[in-house]
Image (tube, rainbow, N blue to C red):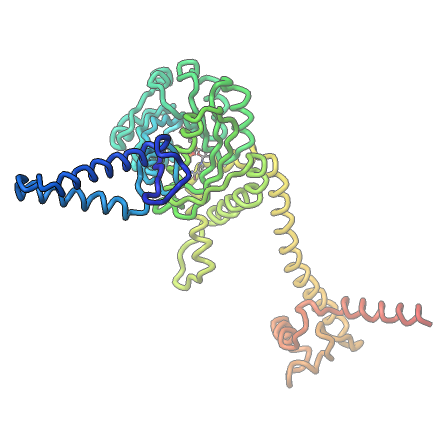
Length: 427
Ligand code: NAP
């Protein structure tokens, strides 16, 4: 990188003129000017044409202007913050075209390929199935045979295979045909698993970058603005070109507006189990319920429908992978199950208590047992005799009284009993 060295013209410095080429030049020029002025004063200028007079005046004006200017750039040798040329060069370098190879050209592989191409990169792909015609439409070079794919020497190879098939795909992948310092990356929705696979199976001179775009073909259909991209630079060589290659790949997501989150693969899996896995589980449950549009959709219901849309279309392999290959998922599933049982128990406990009240009330009317809300059976329902009041009447009665639905005889009895025990203890 280079920038200007500056000399303050006209400032008297301690620097000797013979050691200072710029100042030396200025001296020489002003000596020449003096000589010309002397000639002019001897009257020899009378022979000079008016044209030469004009040029003489212009050159005098130029020297004067140069003297008046406070700063004069002379040489380019060191970086300065205002050096736009250097900044521009950095930008161009960042944008330099990558040859990106995609392994697994399914739903997500194609989705990524479109954005890479939009960002000016060359994309080639390989996959188990034949995607030749789709690839041609997208302007992607398609190689059914992974050997042919590797011999195209992509700068970056991104595994977009299903979580379940990634290990087998990597085991069978002819990486010896790739360039010696290829950058390998993955976009699996779990991160610790591919990181370990890469570290175990990839040659040591390969760089490793683990990525997780936390969005998919549905949620990232339009803009990627503020959508999170989690990345972990697991292993990147020291050379500048290798670090720049990683930055160039990341810049695709950055330039698309993603929220860039650098995070270890381990931390990702902890956080993803309680966010992404739960989201997918609830989305799948609701999808299985086959929720449909109603004419009175609330905002909350709309968001449930959009949750189903964003998750239910993903392959079951993907969902199963989120569970099987993230060791934190089992605990989260148990927590979800427990929470559901607790909520359900709360509902059924109250209902159960109410039904029991009803059974006991019916049986004990003659002995004067009280109804669930603690009122005398014939007291709470206006003029209706207690015996004629229905279960629903009593329910409404209880809600109106502000008491809990399950304000049962049992609870009241429990309260009385503990009051009696407290009294006995204080005595
Ligand atoms: P997927 O069902 O998880 O994966 C489909 C891809 O895996 C296809 O390319 C398919 O190849 C390949 N594949 C499946 N079984 C294979 C096998 N036995 N041998 C070789 N290849 C096999 O669906 P996806 O949505 O495209 O996801 C791909 C990757 O992206 C996954 O790792 C997923 O976790 C990740 N991801 C997905 C999303 C999303 O929203 N969809 C978001 C972020 C990350 P063929 O089509 O050639 O059979």
